[in-house]
Length: 355
Image (cartoon, rainbow, N blue to C red; front, side):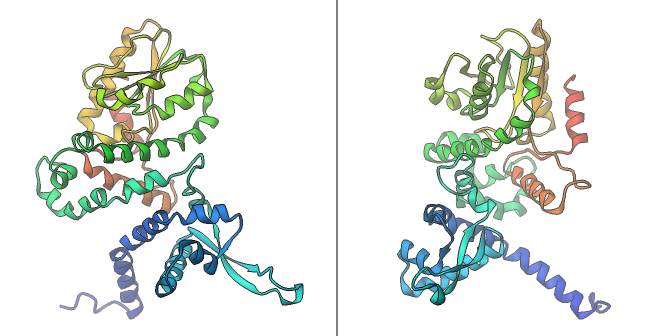
């Protein structure tokens, strides 16, 4: 039986395009990796105006045999909205002889890849594009048939956290990537600062290098902040302790630190150098973490609350591209035993934990 016998030719070709688009989707990532490795967004930024192909290859010192390749890579990245192709006028000669040329200008996406800027996501992109991390997804088939192993345990031979603790250079890259991602939360805090009003203390659960806590402590100098994470995570940051920011080591599955803090408590689960917290874990572990916070709040005479900053899958309301990104993040969580959740799934966690 010919499965496609009832299909029109254009429908079959559309299906082929869809298959090929996803089959070659890894080339999008590799072109982005190329762009970041050569620091092209930073080069254009420092050029202070759109840059021509001739100017770009001159700065990169590209050999003549590869000029065509660079042009094709830039065309691909421009098509994917990392650069805008604009028309400029050559300043050489008089007004009548000015020559029109094509040049590459930054977009909002490539502006986020300029090194040294406040919201630079280059460390995040470098870590995500590290072959050690990305190649593990070649083993999804094997992962499917393994009863209890995570994808990282299959590909790395151990869980992700143990692997990072034993590979300092990769851990440093990982921490830098999560810290760069955390800077984006600053944008949200500007619009939702009211959530911190009336609070006197924060325990940043799984706070890693304290990027978000530092932002909050700068915004609210009277708010006492403790970054609570595994001892080997926080040990390198003890020197950054200030009057309203300190680091404490411990295990969030055993207890949540409330030492040194008084007043109404806030337990913050946020973007940090150990990834987002709750999406790292399955339902059982998430409930355990939340119960520890609930216990700590119950034992605090002035009470408190817990805030979770995380992705929420909402396919019915989000536009296609945003949902696609969230679903990809959900697949990324197969490296652990975590997942991205809908609002209803979060609600279920909170209720089971006693909130």
